[in-house]
Length: 383
Length: 251
Ligand code: SF4
Ligand code: SF4
Image (cartoon, rainbow over the protein chains, first blue to last red):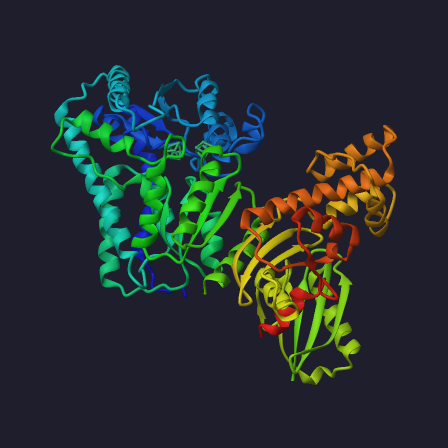
């Protein structure tokens, strides 16, 4: 059941977007550098502490894909193709609906999955791209030290680009405000644990997608308004409680959550980079800032890492805490990491008696009807 | 009062009339382009076949790929739930249902007539009725002939392409190499079985196994399946109507 009580603050996120583009245009004229990123392992705190601004370039739309396929093989993940396409496609990259806006000075990329890594080599021909390495076995003894070294080089790259010094004071300030945002998001998710959550998954997803574009201050302000509004408005939602787990859903991609909620399900939590992985852990404010940042970010349970039991444990924990009836395991086509990890997640869920539906798809609407049938059957099974 | 279940499948539309919890009649017609028209035609046909009067119709429930387009239905339900119910009615001992239709194939595990798990292959024609239909064409034989021929093969050809389009060209090159027709036919059936048994094994069989959908009418496929799964298959008298029947029962 859907409630129809209007949430003014949800619109604020969307409305802030055009203003944000103008703000970036203006600050760029004033000499501010604009950084593009494509992964959660690149710490925002360091970028903002350098005085630069940042936008996340992950593509969730299908429009730029044909342009990208002139360079990239068809059988790689649509997120990679869409992101690359929005940079190289002239028609697209200059439009204001594109995450790139044609304004990015430097891309801070990362060595996660192979498709992305190799795409960055091509991307570098269009926009200067710095690729950070990541320890692929984050639980290794020296992984943390190695990651800190990579963050220190990132520090140097950013200082050189912006001409600003990244001081500990600045870093601490950024950590503090980023933690504030994380706490607000945790508070929002806390509301979703209720028997009748005041906010739906499709609404939450659009909020999290705006995290990619809005300035941290604006985003945080809007979160406060949203929380306030949810406190006073009596909104109730019902339906089988679903957790989404898997690949990120970049801006423009709302396909599967929309089907789930249109067919009567209610998404109560997302184990995803447009979900818990984006904000779950805090950076320790009492430690030396660079080390504290490194510790927090290395905890992100991405399927590119080995081993990744921590992700499986977290899925089970979230499923319990949010009292979910079933899990929809969402993967993008050709995303090997999340597709292979599905097997172990499925085993763990089975052991815990939690039903699972897995959906592997892309950005096209070609399989909408088939997905609807599966979702219907899954929801009927849960009822 | 009678209730009617309509299964608006991609290839065929099925309708079942239920009167006092017994099947009073059924109809199977090709869907063609328009789900809605096919649904109406199946509805009229099933009424006349069962000799029932339209005024007696209580509720109508639609299932299948085109279920949302059947505007005159009172409610819709997914074909997975519908098949589970229909098979549960006809073969109460069945706990694993394999359904191979024209456009998709699915494996459903049930407990007390309720779905507890399922897998579906619906993104491509591989492992569905369409696969056999197209490849039979490349052999220039009918579907029935394909099933019969396959049974006499002693040395099934290896068809490595799962994709229907590639399998078609593979058949043509096998023909060019003078591979026997029956061996190609058996190879084709083996390939669709391989695909489906992989799905069944993922979910683990719970006896008994029921086989429904259009492809279940092909004895060659049934035999090969029984061999691959090492278990006997339970077949309803009319394997194509379990979805529509389930819908009628779920009203
Ligand atoms: S899924 Fe992994 S690679 Fe992708 S954004 Fe998240 S952390 Fe980065
Ligand atoms: S979704 Fe998977 S394949 Fe795509 S960029 Fe992320 S990790 Fe790589």
